[in-house]
Amino acid sequence: MKWRLRVVHTTGYRYATAVTQSYNEARLTPRHDDRQNLMVARLESVPATRAYKYTDYWGTEVNSFDLHVPHTELKVIAASVVETTDQPEPSVAATWSQLRSPEVLDAYAEYLEWTDYVPKHRELAAVARSLRKGRTPEDTVLAVSKWVHDKLKYQRGTTGVHSSAVDAWQAGEGVCQDYAHLTLAMLRAVDIPARYVSGYLHTKPDAEVGETVVGESHAWVEAWTGQWWGFDPTNDISIGHRHVWVATGRDYGDVSPLKGIYSGGAATAIEVTVDMTRLA
Image 1 (cartoon, helix red, strand yellow):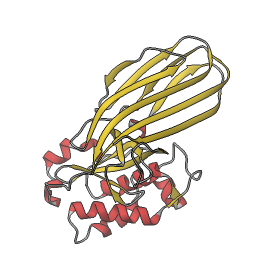
Image 2: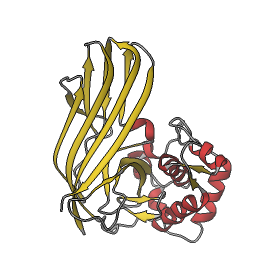
Image 3: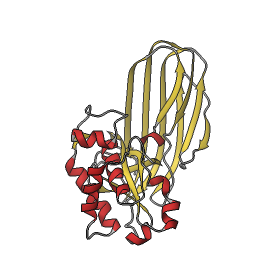
């Protein structure tokens, strides 16, 4: 199935006192691949500024912009139109011995390392090893994703933007970021290169053409088992035409949608909305 989607992601900040200068990076532009075609994208800010575009180390398009006009509010609007299809089934299957080969370990070392969001943990590693028994690497990815889906309860407010995979596991609940981090921790524990994916999820499978829904900023994982392919542990589903991907990295820290530094009063309100319209 193929969909054409318009995505409008709006982020708003309000400050207690005027901000005199700020420096920002936005990772909000959807990417091209064999499943997704970016047709148009633009980024606007209020107050207005001009963005400098570049591609970061992980292959993500970044819009960098700075503001030197005093302001008490900042709004960033990222709008794009993409065509999406369902992800094809993986066509190449690596064996466990191939995953442990020096060539693979060297090529994908960064997606096997531990981070603050995805720390090494003995009990999680033991569970991952038990799920690996008798399974191929590809089937292990599915088994781990299902385990995470069944283990965590989706609940906003329990974890925060800085919570790790272990924090979510111990709490027994979290949001999509936590599902992705926990899955990554377990896959890396059994030597499967795995990366974090940020993007959007259209929330209505039977949406009519022209219908706008409240979408979601979303996260899922991609694993390398002979080739890269993705899975959504939050919903326990394959990546399909309702998923729009923006960035990949080792964890959330590499793909944060909007970050920066500023000089001025503390932020007193943050508003984030995602509107998604099926165009075709």
